[in-house]
Length: 219
Image (cartoon, rainbow, N blue to C red; front, side, top):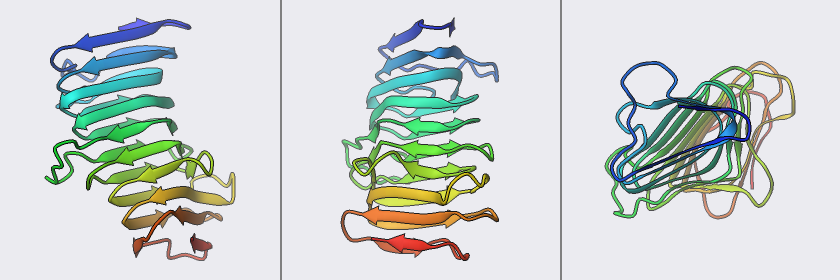
């Protein structure tokens, strides 16, 4: 399906929203909002290939959300009741609101975790609200930076894993986040300056961090 400027795509399913099993782009809305509402998953077994500007997705029962985006994407509101949320993007990701509720309080591996991957060397993961509840974890990878949008925005999870490739010499921070997490594993790559700054709202255990010469601050 496709939509042009100012158009929107809305899909409502009493079951699951499934990929067709090929590598072709399933949804195109280069300047539009796509809304996907289902009971049992969105691309859960095979990620949906998309080329959309903004997305809302909600899974009301058990099931994952898995998206493979061609370029930049704003995740306006992605929620699962009992399922993982995984988004890969060829461009940058703006995580406006993402929540894995984990309502059944399950702890079976990665099945309720949130994973965001902005894979090109110039791509960022920009965070407003990312929440993995009841023992679920968050993993974020960016070719360039992982940045919170303001002091009011944060990541909440059990474990938080971050890799910032620091691919561009575009700012002093490679990681700048407010968090409420138990364990942190954060790495900054690249050869230019890329500070790693975490502002934690509670206690935190540091598993690993940037071992280079960049400044590290945990407060």
